[in-house]
Every structure is written in C-alpha cells, then in structure tokens.
Image 1: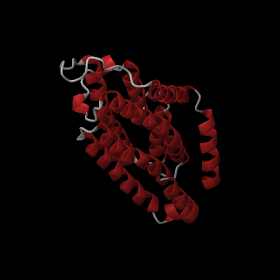
Image 2: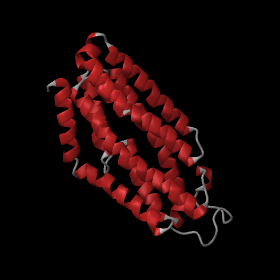
Image 3: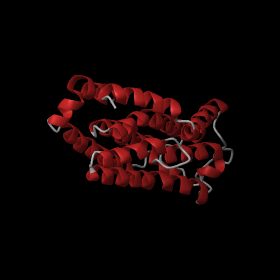
Length: 236
C-alpha cells in the first residue's frame, strides 16, 4: 500500500492525478475494495480470515485518502497507516492467544470466552474500536480526517462509503465481543481449566491495546509526520 501511495504521488504527482481525474478513478477502486472486503469479512466464521479480509478493506483507506488529493484526506490516509497497524496487530495477537489457550479458530466456538479470557477479549474490544474508528482509540483520528478530506474534496459518495464501511466494521466486530462477554457458553465448549493465555502472549496484546488508546490522546508525532508528507506533496 505504501508503494502504491509513493507511485501515485511521486511518479504521477498531485497535478497529473487531478488534471486527468485519475484521483477520482482510484477513489472508486479503493471504495469498491473497502466495501467488498468488509462484506466478505462479515460472512466469515474463522477469526483470522475475518481479520485478513478486514485488513484488505482497511488498507484501502490509505489509498483512498491519498486519492482524494486534499490535505485533510491525505493526512487521514497517512495517519491510518499507524492507527490501523496498532489496532489490527492487537486483534491478530488476540486471535493467536485464543488459539494457543483454547485451540479455537472459529468465532462460533468463542461464545462466552470473555469470561475465561477477560484480558484478551478486552484488548480485542479496544482493537475493534480502533478499527471501527471511534473513541477512546486512535483510529478515530484517521477516520475523522478521511471524512473531513472527503468533504474538502466534495466527494459525497466517498463520505457515504466511509460511513457505511465503518458501520460494517461494527457489524462484524461488536457481535464477537458481545457473545464473548454476555452469552453463556455450553459446558462442553471449553475445557474446565481454560484461562488466559501465556504471559508472553498476553503482555504484547495488552501493550498494543494500550498504545491504541494513547494514540487518541497523544497523536501529535504522527500528525507531524503526516504534515511533512502532505506539505512535500501539495505545498500546503
């Protein structure tokens, strides 16, 4: 994705992309990928497959932000590189920890797992909120600037895609968390001795989840980097 962004901005440049309406074409392609990835993720039972298709969708936000050719849109796309990275690695860490502790891969087998592994599923919830793009996680900033960028570029269609895709994100993440904490598992679903995964699994996911929260409060380093890149591309 970073390579695509560099090719679009470094080889073609903002002026050419704007003059030949190539930015709009890339916006359409990225928007399709965002929605397709989210819809496919919505139908997955295997947790890692769901996260993989979610990643396809989320990485397209970065390209979309660049293709908007507006300072705020580009800022949102660049910010999403970092915000998505911490949120999604938290989710993958959680999926791995669940497999190590229980051997479970499918979401349908994780009902009530939040009572057995509360730290892991709390971290999963934080990672999910960051991907959805709502406080108290840093993913809010990148999604917010993408929304502002779509308005700045007068791309109302892109705005609708951003809002609908975030709704789809919530549709495939929130039920997992709800069933993990608020639905009772069948007695045969988990071994009686199941508990949190090994500390070497739990500590990394706790750290990345904490960073996802801190990025909401202290995003300035990434805003500074984004501003430098946007200025080099647009002069603004």
